[in-house]
Amino acid sequence: MTKKIGIILSLSLLVIFLGFSQSALVERYLTAANNSYSQKDYAKAFDYINYVYGQYTSENVPQNVEILAETIYYDYLQEIREKKDTEAFAKVKEKLLEYPTLSSERVNRLVRTLNTMETQDQQWGPVANTNFMSKEAADYQAQLAKTQAQLEAVEKALAEAKANNVKEHEEALLKEQEYLQKQKEIYSDAIVKSNQTMKSNTIMIAVICLCLVGIIVGGVVVIISVTKKSEAAVQRQQEQFEATLQMVAQLTRNQKEAVHIAQISDVYNSEFGEDSPRAVASLPDVEITESEHQELKKLADKCKEVGAKIDIYTSRKNNSKNVSEMVFKIANGLGLKSYEAMLYFCAAMVYDIGFLSIDSALLTSEKLSDEEKYEIRSHVKLGADKIDFVPEKYKSIFLDAILMHHENIDGSGYPAGIQGEKIPLVARVIHVVESFIALISRRNYRGIFDKEAAIKELRARPNFYDQKIVDVLDSLV
Image 1 (spheres, rainbow, N blue to C red):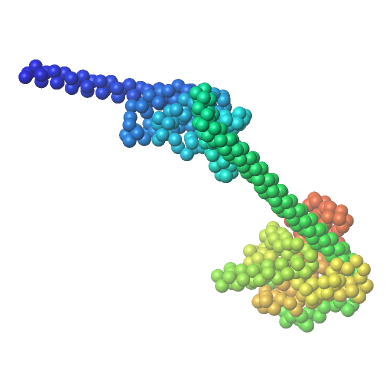
Image 2: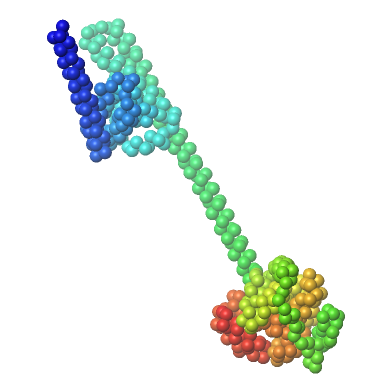
């Protein structure tokens, strides 16, 4: 009894030992398969993984083994296709019959493609091309491969029937062979037609895409052309407007232009003339309150809105913005309080508000009568009636800017012909800045001025412009 127990124990230990040995061997082969795959030696990887796979039943194959096996099979088929290795392909198909769980969708699709190409003796191109094959064509190819296999089986049986001289069987096989041959031709023609249809559709889509691209490009070209023409038209209008201002500025002062300030605002209580110039408006020399700060902010927003309307009406893009920003900088450069500089900024945005009361056709007309020129010059007086949005305590600054920005240092300007520092400071600053902006904005009219050339032009006319203000402008630009 004791002897039997010893034998059983020995056998058990042997089985356990063999199990451990087998498990270790499987692990080694799995590692070898993985290493060979990493080195792109798919043939060795294929052999190693088949051994590993063979150690399990179809129900208990570990997931990692199944994933690695399917990957090796797919890449090995890719390599087989490139090398046209029909012998290796036959081995893979045999193993797929043995291990059907490895027949994934992509592996099956590749096998069907290779079967068809091998049958038709076609050149094997990149597998990626099969992705562009229609589903209909792929189905026809699968049927063609099946028909070809059946045809080969019938031909083999027919050869045996002829060898054995079995006439009845031979006739039946001949009929079946003829039927399969016709079926093969039908599937082959269907594949060709399907591919041709797909190519035609692809060409049609390509043509449609090209037409759409052409339409889009054409549209963009038209938009760019229209935009450029529009910009050119605006530029021409701006240049003509500047030229018109130059013409009206050269007129001698007319007595009809005399400004009776009492008719314009209660702030002014005397008539302008060479003997009775108005002093520069004084501003309260106190810190502004928070409510006044908010009042100024609201005023600035309104002035920006009105300035934009003036720019559109006079065809001068961003003129109010450009002039007001430069006036603000010069005001600070002259040492004015921030309160005053802010008011200068606001007034400079609407200094040409009187143009809104002038016929817009006159502003860009190439031929003007003297009467029409004087009408354009009247914008300085007309503007005084359009600032009802300005609080009374600030109106003096706005009236200075609107009425006096065309006065020259030597008294040759309009509407009052006052001279030197008798011209309100805000008007002198705007006069310098407006001329500077006009010079550097020109394109055709009197040539292009850069900033240095524009400053030089202003310095060459001390009879028009306050040179102290020009000096400050020069330091800023």
